[in-house]
Length: 225
Image 1: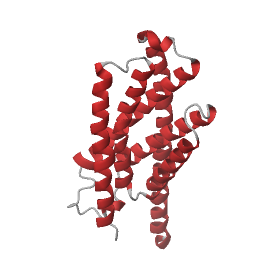
Image 2: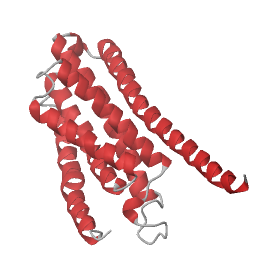
Image 3: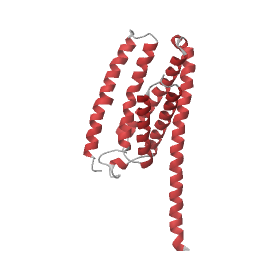
Image 4: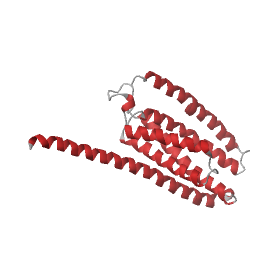
């Protein structure tokens, strides 16, 4: 009896940990979907009260306006979380002794990836529903590949550092969306539109050019891992 008690105990703990991880993954994905739904509704409700230009939009334009609302919130959430995990926390420190850097993950990093999957699922559902008003085939491919890579990193627990780098590049999305909002509201000649354009250029340079140079350099230096 003694000989069977330890393996059974280990198996029970392993099964519990697996179930706990699966619950966390599912909860984070559902949280991302719920977050998108709430922000979508709030964007429409607040915009109809505060912006006269919103009330003059067509039905299709209102749908895209609201869609860009939860796109902006998702971008802000994952950008700040990615910055914290990559820069401020010790999770991916080069001098850390916590194993290979590509194998490191945490509850927070897993949650961020799950929430992002929830966002891509929601946005993809809207793209299919309104196809091609919110984006054509290229958007479907982009979202499909994004979800595939995030799911692989989440389930395997590997290469999350690189997925988080890519998610940080979403920090340019709020500026892209604000540019669209100002354009659709007839504010292309405003000072805010110009300032946003400058911020978009700087953000794109940092988060889409310089970051990806570092991204590929880091991958090359850690290629053997």
